[in-house]
Length: 323
Length: 306
Image (cartoon, rainbow over all chains, first blue to last red; front, side):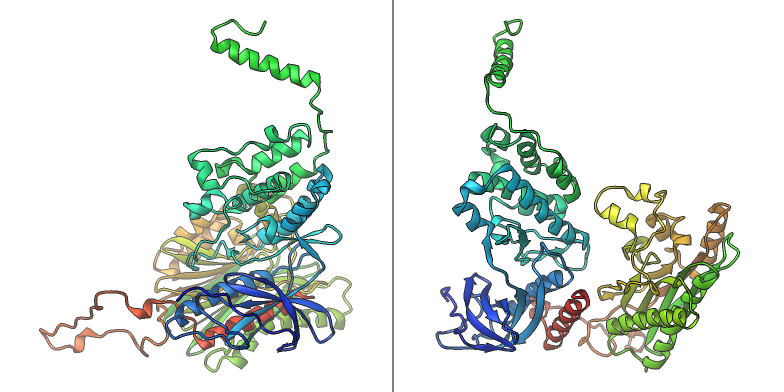
């Protein structure tokens, strides 16, 4: 059967105790709605609806799931429960809060807090001028507070990227979409289907999933920071492993941001997981260190660089060294 | 159910023993509990006693012969013990509420369920290795998780005795529930207080408890611990069970054990799956499991939305 897009529940539909306002987003596995609860508060409701397995026609409420697809549909539901379980335990201002979880229309729904804002992805596309040194440090330090909370519950996010980071209107970030999150210490959980986004997933996401750890989320944080500066995703880790064409942040934005910030980004983006910051705490420490003013590319720096280059070239040419 | 169980508590070099432990079982369920009391004027002992007694009484009331909802039972019984300690504090007009750690484990249908608050631990040991253990609710464990200190450094950290969750404190305890853990024959489940685990790294403890005769192994372990510990040795307590049944998937028949002695000589039973994939191997959620998963998530939401 060809993949078709599912139809969303109609506006005004009463779903359990919630009143559907409109669809917020549509993904391969779920639809997210804006809704209001009994008190008229806005909430976001995520509906489990994998479009290859469950089909809702126009004007229908209950999706059709054929007997053939039922086992796979139920298996996917397990993953949806994992996400619910992961989020239910977390109560932190920088992590999306789950408010309710229920069953209806042959599927399951997760109710989450809703706040005005936009994803970091949209934000960096539209507000290039705001991406200053201070913005980067503030947003990511706060975001890391949330990630620390996630890791302290022995969970990994595993799909961190600008489109999974929500920016409230007061510029505080919130981690959303824990669809890939996994309990790391539960050895009895079979490894579920890998889920990742090229450019943001760490090298161990691809082939060595037994090496996944806090450092894998840290790679994704580094990639997200890089994407903020570049306004596009960095080269994917699997292709970097073949031929690394990623220009280090230190080279690409020298002088525009502090060396220390750029070094930190490159540190997170090390292909070898052992060379990255090993904990969120270590990374946060680097981000909160006193800022050295960005060094403008003045003559002194340029000369230094030149002499260093001369030195190498000189060596290659077999000369004794710089003049 | 078939199992071997052994429990013992020793004062170490302390004038009194503030550890309390118990186990009790019905035809189809076994519960073990251990508590390590804290607080001056011997009141720590009372807190531990209230906790252990509260849990065993709850078990005696509700195990007929199984516990209906193990996790909710453990959570409720531990919260009730917490409130009972607060009531005691109130009734005796104590300035400082006595407190206690608590870890309790329920085994039925060869599935282990446990809950804990504080730094008394539960280990599941399989084949001489630690299959899983509880994470302490202690400041040092947080520091380890954050990568600030190593396990080895934690053993000598000045804050190693500070717990952030316990029964009887001013704050509601954080009661951490385990996952449902199917047990296999030969698995050892051990609950112990910090007086004991503080002296043994995980792997040493696991190797020690691997040997078959629990009735001898555990007293030996305590003898050794007594000898190893210094002049200020803490109370030492352990309750350990060696489980002799294996978890059997529900729906695979009331008894899957095969008794070959009744078979006629020369008869051979062959069970061979047809070529290709057995459709039963697909992991499918049952209606019941869906309901339970939703209930579990809802109760977690409730618990953490204070």
